[in-house]
Amino acid sequence: QQQVPLAIFPLRPVLGAGFHFLVALTMGLVVTTYFKGYLDPLTLLSLIPATAILFLLGWFFAIISAVVYTHFPDASHLLEIGLQILFYVTPILYKPDAIATRGGKLALLVNWNPLTSVMALIRTPILEGTFPALQHIVISLLFLVIVGTIAVVLLRKMERTLVFWI
Image (tube, rainbow, N blue to C red; front, side, top):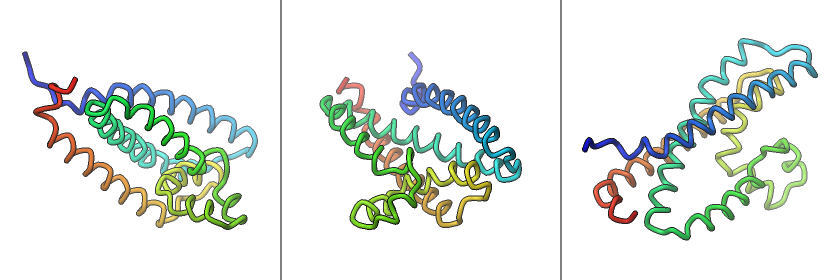
């Protein structure tokens, strides 16, 4: 038998989701071009590093959830509930300004959510035709480093004994 790095096993579903994301992104660009009339190709180049950041975040989260799920099989139910909450706290279907004008605790929660900055890396070049703000880039990269460090440390620590928990 040949040893393979355990990080490649969570990579398969992330690659599949990444392909679906690219198809949806292409359709989103086509629809946006149809309604807006013109998209600046120079600002659309910023989607390349944004997509890479989103891909790596997905991979790191898949590694973390795989290790946690291996040790605690009931974690999938908690993950479903947690991801539903995260979906509504992250401005995916709405603009962050829609919540910010209302104020309150929900606006604070949306503003402190690091995935808001990750979404801004993709949303801003498409909808506004400008480059993402430096604040969003820094927060996204910092969040990527933190999640990546947790994933690598967790996988390195559990790599030798992980097979016994399956």
